[in-house]
Image 1 (cartoon, rainbow, N blue to C red):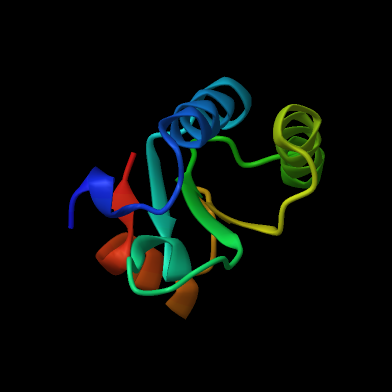
Image 2: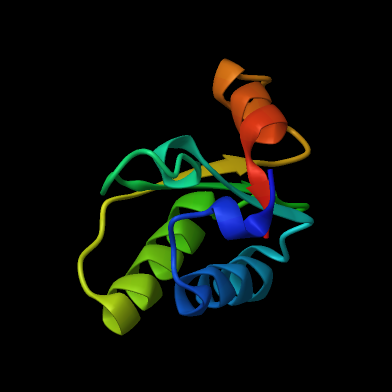
Length: 102
């Protein structure tokens, strides 16, 4: 799938990418779930972030969500964060295989 398959504006995608890099020093950022299905409407924003950072993740998640909310208003966002020491989860595999890199 290509980036133009994502049901988010360029402004949203650019800001998600900026926040992920600035806050998490993200190695990889992907959008997955309902926002990559052109046939669907609405839905939360599922974001997968692979980061080298392995501490203070809750604080970093809150910072990300607060900055996003400040710019775009209240949105339902699921942040899936994979660190070097993360226990492998099924959701990581789904996001990595089905997600669209931004």
